[in-house]
Length: 288
Image (tube, rainbow, N blue to C red; front, side, top):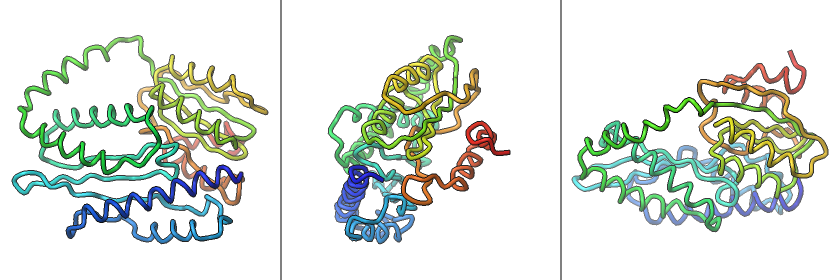
C-alpha cells in the first residue's frame, strides 16, 4: 500500500481513538458507553505504534460501541456506532438507534432525519463528529417524544406518494478495474456514490472491484463520471436492471487483502456469498 494511503489509515485510526477517549470521559457512568469488542482499541494502538510499517490490512475489525442516552423520566435509548477504518476522512459513521419508545412512524422520521444529518455533513470538513451527532440525537428524540404520532403518520403518507412513480427503476452494475490504488480515485468513488445516493462497495488494490446500485439514471451517471478518470483498464462486467431491492445498506470501501495490495480471494468470495452475490465469482474471475 502506498505511503500516502497508509498515512490516511493511520490518521483515521488516530482520530477515532482520540474521539473514543473524549466520549468515554463524557459518557462515563456505568453502562453509558459499552465497547462491543474492547480488543479493537489494543489492535489500533498496536497499529499506530508499529513504526509506520504495519499495513492497513492488519486492521481486521472496526471500532464499534453502544452509547446509552438518558431521557427525561429515566427513560433511555441505545445508539449503536460503527466506524469504518476511513472515518472520518473518507467514510461516514454507521449509526443506528434502538428504542421501543418512539413507535413506527416516529422511528421512520428519526431515520430520515439521521440520513439528512449525514448528507449535510458531506460538504463539511472531515472531522470526527460523533459527540455532536449524539447531542443532536438526544435533542431530536426528546422533541419527537413530545409530539403526537399522528403528525408523522400523515407526513409519512404524503411523502410516500411521489415514490410510487414508475419512472424510478433500481439497477445494479459490477465494474472491474485492473487496479484501484490512487487515494484521489478512491475518495472520488465514495463521494460520487454517496452524492448519487447509491449503495454498494469498492475494493481497492489489484484487481479493483466496484459494485453500485440505486436509481438507474444515477447508476449510469456514476459510470459515466468514473469512466472519464484515467484508468489502465476498466469495464462493466455485468448489468442487473429492474432489481426489486438493494443488496447493500450503504456505500463503503472494503478490503480483502492477504498482503499489501493483493486480494484475499477467499475473504472476498465469502463477502459476496454473504450478500447473496456468490454467482459473481464466475463473472469476475471465471470461477465455478
